[in-house]
Image 1 (cartoon, rainbow, N blue to C red):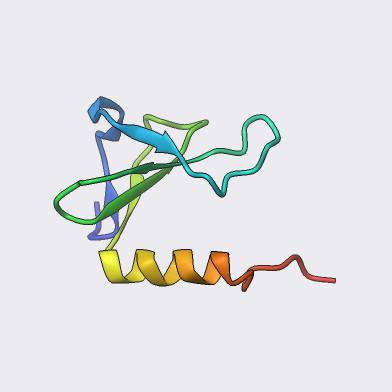
Image 2: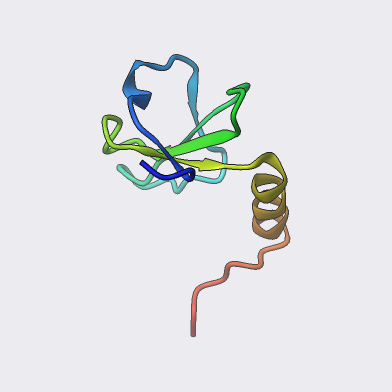
Length: 75
């Protein structure tokens, strides 16, 4: 596994659905707060798959971009 993926995350407790996940069924991003090595993020449809692990500054920049609506659908 590389430095940006975390395996065995299905055994970790405290996952929460991101408030930015879509309302449609099956479109859920889950985040684990207070993980010492960074911010784990996974797809709720595949909880046994490895999670992406973001360094805190990168995660903060991503959240800022989402709040600023930087990710709009292409025309």
